[in-house]
Image 1 (tube, rainbow, N blue to C red):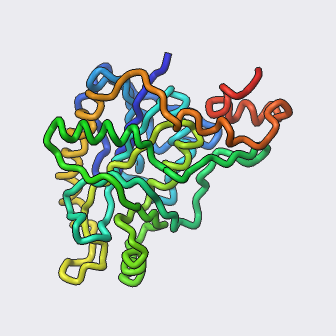
Image 2 (tube, rainbow, N blue to C red):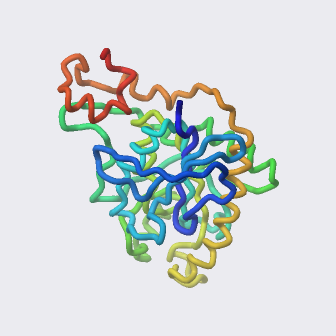
Length: 288
């Protein structure tokens, strides 16, 4: 039996998920080290949920210190099949205003120092990533938003930057010239690893500021972020609860079969230590 079916990743300002019943905490061991925090398991809207604070409670990890592989692997070990990722972002467009929620459907990677695959070291796989978020999951979030009369915008491109410093004005304007919509520091790696783990993944992007390109607005500061995050976090919790209430227990999605034609290595000759390391990820494709 799965310990959880839905994973919730809380970003800056969302360090807990109120309303969970039958709540327990569990530390999950992974071959990639420790996740950001113990997972908080419980029931929410009739669903078995695992909540993880991306930066750790108390916000201990900068984006490049987050152990993304351990975080997603831990969800997989718990049985999670869908992940809702709530994240604070900057807006690169005048019409994506602070306090608004956007569901981006594309990413551009501007990070430099992060590992974003479970593969290598004896096994090769290349998953399809042309559509990096789960369309089906996006449909349910949109339905959940309508149920509580909460507006969300669908679509757009999220630029994932290295951080932890915010953008220079030149960088911010460069991304705008590329037609980018949002900027953040964390979601690209989560999306790639979730796809390799055959987990549906969606970003719920909470706009906090206009980055630093907007000449009529003050450049983003931590104080500005905190003020907006406090309000956005409550909206995120409402949206997550409403989404869970409309999610079906059984479903089929292409995300669940992402490795079917992605593994190039002959699995019959895979070294035993590689099999054991990745069994939660590739187990259904192994003969024994």
